[in-house]
Length: 129
Image 1 (cartoon, rainbow, N blue to C red):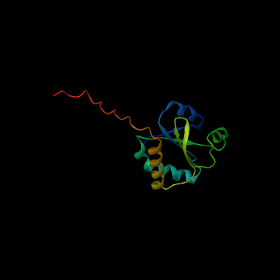
Image 2 (cartoon, helix red, strand yellow):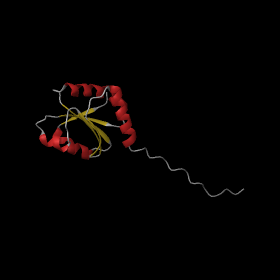
Image 3 (cartoon, rainbow, N blue to C red):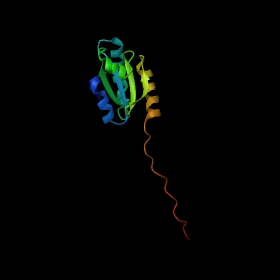
Image 4 (cartoon, one colour):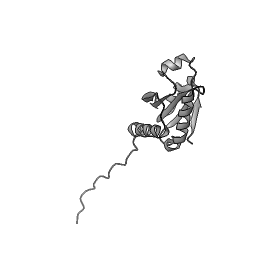
């Protein structure tokens, strides 16, 4: 299983600023059955994305109004994909592991920074025979 970072909701802004790359943030609650289902789905497919997507789990209490408003969490579970501090994708429904895998594959392929390709070699001066 890929490494999940479990952080407090109040620490999320700081974490987003400090770490680079794509980050998946799962806002959930252990009291909500659908959140537990999404957590299991993420744990099943997370090894496939460990080199492309940092996984973060935030246990959200609905009394944390500032966090709910800041990230516009309208339902649980909510998954946000961040590139830096900017939300680039939002998922507010439950998906089966295969559907979630496809969503994440599409997201990573669209938003990931391409590898830096080496420049083609410049042709040298014409050889004299």
